[in-house]
Length: 93
Image 1 (cartoon, rainbow, N blue to C red):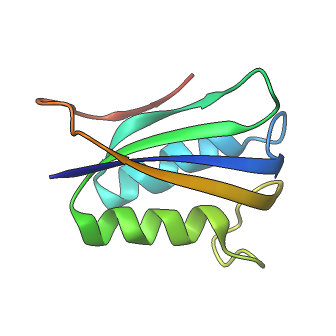
Image 2: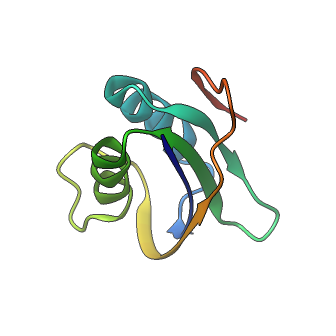
């Protein structure tokens, strides 16, 4: 089990980005959440198998999008953190 926090910057708030991320994460079987941050970025906290996290990161940042991702991502940061025991499901805040 692995966990990563990806913060994306660009036109990502007010365009349905979090709800799109929720659908993609659920499709991949990942746990976690997506939330708008005060600085205009979106933070996506995902936990699961390493290959599925990799697939989600690619979907979050690819240009142009192949998955109908709303908005436009211009930059991102990725941090690996300790997994949360028992984390289940994915939500958008």
